[in-house]
Image 1 (tube, one colour):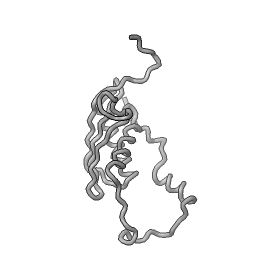
Image 2 (cartoon, rainbow, N blue to C red; image 1 turned 180 degrees about the horizontal axis):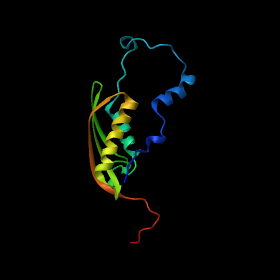
Image 3 (cartoon, helix red, strand yellow; image 1 turned 90 degrees about the horizontal axis):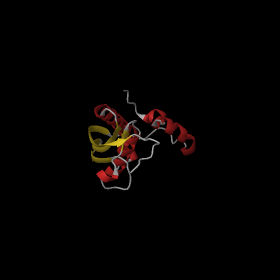
Image 4 (tube, rainbow, N blue to C red; image 1 turned 90 degrees about the vertical axis):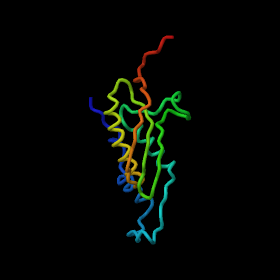
Length: 144
């Protein structure tokens, strides 16, 4: 079974920048970093990027409500940022029946790539915690 990220249909940062250039205008070449200032991101912002990236991976899903506290079935991420380096932990589920290690491997690569692409941070460590299986979506109704 081949597991592929669903991000193939998502635009890249470069594509988005090209689309926004006519709207935002071009200020010419960038000044040196010391003159431009510094951009910082809250851990929570990177947590949301990581959690959303899990949802882009085929056969990966968030944590069911009964397994964690929260308003939705999205994955949960914990992030620690030190300068330009991020350490990430993700709680997620896998759609049953799927190969857990394969899905986790794809999720790890995809989340790291998306966090780096969207935030510019280097992901030094990314721990995946698979906390459960979710049933595949079916059209059958369950009889109690």
